[in-house]
Amino acid sequence: MSKEDQIDSEGRRLATTVWTALDRKAGAIIELTVRQLKNKTSTWTVMGVSVLLLTLLSAFYIDSVREGFESIDNDGDSVDFDGDGYPLGQEMKYGSSDYDEREYPGAAIFIPENQINYWGVRTHSGNYTWDVFGPSKFTGSWENISTNYAEYGDECPEIIGEDLANTPYGYSSFACTLADNSVYVQFLRFDGNGTLAVAEGWNAEYGRTTESYYVAPDPQSAYIDEDGLDWDSENPSQSQGFDDDGDCTQEGYYLPTGSQNDDDNRNGVACDVQWIRGPDGS
Image (tube, rainbow, N blue to C red):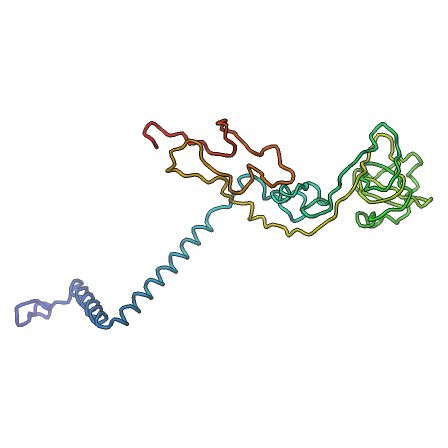
């Protein structure tokens, strides 16, 4: 009789098969479990470690899924067009321009009072903040030209004539000192007490400037993946939603845009979601 045909005293085959190996392993696991149940402390330890491992695995899974979704700026207010470190959404709240790096939340704001227009009187005198848009000459005491254009003290090229017509500097900021110690300026804003003369066909504004204060820049992530509206699918009302991040009502915005209190669905309720149920009530 071969080894595979051997039987025990009760007539059962003793051949080693896959099934008998699995039975032995299962029996060992059951025996271990029974022994563990006899010791309550050991049982609770095993259960606690298992729950902890499952929790950690779930946390890693959720984090990996979350990072797999692309962040979306659904209303375009996370951009920073002028590169001053303040996103558009924050600039809108404070009323500053995101297209002028001189204007940002907390910065001194220029408030124009009047202007030297294109074809009117070419000069004006006084103690103002001057915002110059073209070839101009300033005579008097001034402040902070050096802040906006460091090379203002350089002698002006001879090409600049008395009528300020020949100015080959394009549309960039520029300043220099004329022979009579007056200052030639173009496309600059500065404070000064004196007289500004503007070339024919150009203009300048004059007014006051507010005091500056510090405002910490918001991260761009604060204006990405915003939950624009809260709404409840279980609510039978057709008009739902609340603008929980404020970019529709724009309440508290210093300078709201033309899109505040939007009513695109034309149901007479601003900043809401109109939910239209189907025939089956869904």
